[in-house]
Image (cartoon, rainbow over all chains, first blue to last red; front, side, top):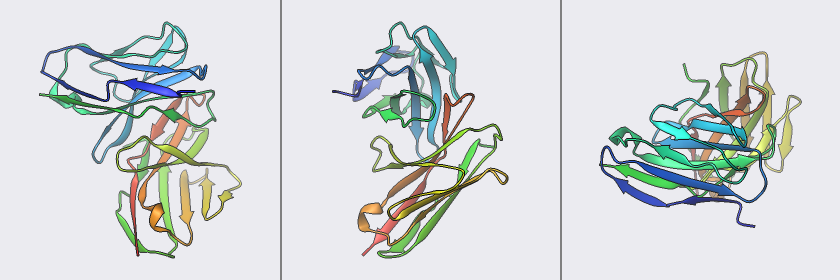
Length: 112
Length: 110
């Protein structure tokens, strides 16, 4: 049972490039979410999904797109990377609102 | 104002000490409350849920005060291995919008 798998672990982009951070879970969790973590800011919610075909914005959604075509996958797309998007990104999933979040191991993204 | 606020610390305590962390939240409709632990920028892991009646797990005690909108975590008999960042977490909007505090850093010294 792999849990939540994020790829890549590290990525360096140039300003203006686009890329997709992948997140997959094999626990049949309906709820999935993306966070970014910056020093002194804690984890901030970017987007979340409560099931296939349903997504919503979190605290800091600008510059990011998501889609949820399957229960397992919840990719995060950066359309035009900016230095302000340099951060550590975590994907998480859970079964329901009162249950614990299972996190992926994170993606360290640097935008030059 | 942030939805969830914590004292960033750091808290520097000797082994065996008792330490308490507080957290306040702004959304009175918040429904679920948790403490997570994070080590050295690794992924956060659930420490404990927080219930209205208060709850205890070994050396850890969590309290919730809905009227004042704050949550607390008490760690008794601190161990070196307790050194970490403690994250206060609140869920609202039916429990699906989960917001993290910035975390409180704890250093336990020998």
